[in-house]
Length: 353
Image 1 (cartoon, one colour):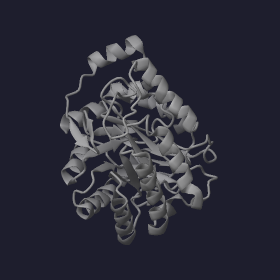
Image 2 (tube, one colour):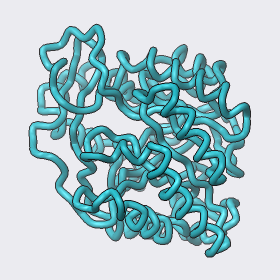
Image 3 (cartoon, rainbow, N blue to C red):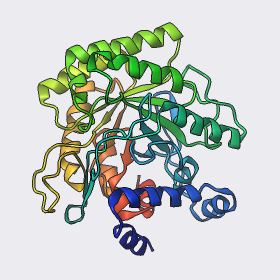
Image 4 (tube, rainbow, N blue to C red):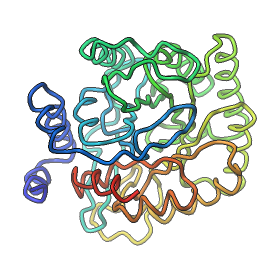
């Protein structure tokens, strides 16, 4: 069935088809449709613990799919163990000029240069609070890492991926991240510091030792001041050199961050066939598989079990997901695989893990 739907979606431009698919998934979370879908889509329980949280299974939807938190119940209904909303910025912004998303069908890949478009922190907070009211459960107000009730009214973990606004100078980036941590600490199960998107000018410089020490040091100080232990993860690029990776991991461990997400999209263009292969932006999908796996291996060796790792990038099949777990990841995430293979991929991965 998804092959038919995919042909229709792929007849639209990528941003339009993404929005339409998100609306369709949102419908799965509505009243009678939700009840019917949940009855049809019963997945095996594969619980795993990480960052002081218990996930019903290791599979999540990566940041970027639901930027504003509008389809949380529908995504939960697909069977994901966690949903990472965002990237969220403090203020609304339109992102980079269009066209800015390109399908590389021959390569099962996507290039995007979106630049964190979104409705801003207030809108996303409103979306989470509305979901909590509908589920008649309290907000996740416990600041010591234990869940007190999901915004979805079930056991799906909600993460927030946080980024700075485009017009915020790098030297002031910590202010953006701290404002988001204060806002979303009570509303999410975990928070991710996104410093690795290639589509916001200069953002990846925050992965360098000096800037990263300032940023994560400020975050650590805020956590101590507020007596909060909400898990905070850091998302890294796949394009870091060994020296850059060692420095970043050292700062992440020294500042007491709780986990690592590896990896974001890549600037590499090796072996692509599509006519869109030279478009600027971050590449995701099948071509990212080798680089993401290589980065995972390095991180597993260097952190030596001190923090859990979430692996994302190029996971297009159950075998890909299982290999990431075998290589040392605690959790995995998909995005582009869902575009090319549809919701059945969620069931197949969860069943295989």
